[in-house]
Length: 149
Image 1: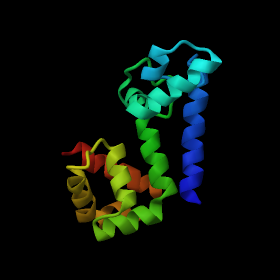
Image 2: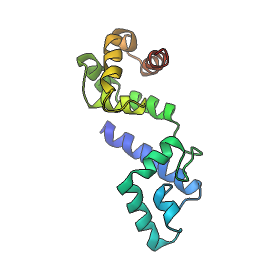
Image 3: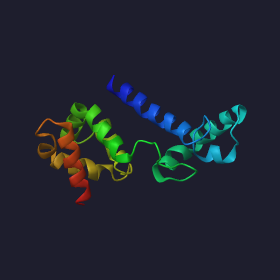
Image 4: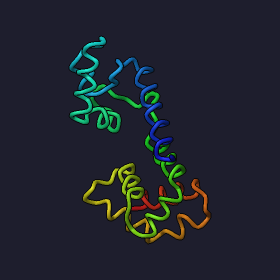
């Protein structure tokens, strides 16, 4: 249920931001650059964005006509993820693997090849991160660990 709620919140924020930024229904990305804004071509634009992953990449790095105006900032996305998945994340960090810690690693910019480093760092500091049983304290501790590298 938490995953569904988080997905709805994030997607709602992204779609609202897309309309606020004067993109078509397909949002920003390669598709919006290749196809003009009308009903018929928005299907093609959305398909292009989905096929090439350019919308996700564009929102992350500010390319393909995407910007961060109105979008959930990366830091807020990380914080929201940690708060929504706190107990599951704590469990995954303690055991040293799992979907929650892997997804958090992606939010911190780790690739599939170096996610293990992020996971190992958090596992080594599990007590510090999760001792207070408070999501905001965990966010602060993780951010401090990642920036100290």
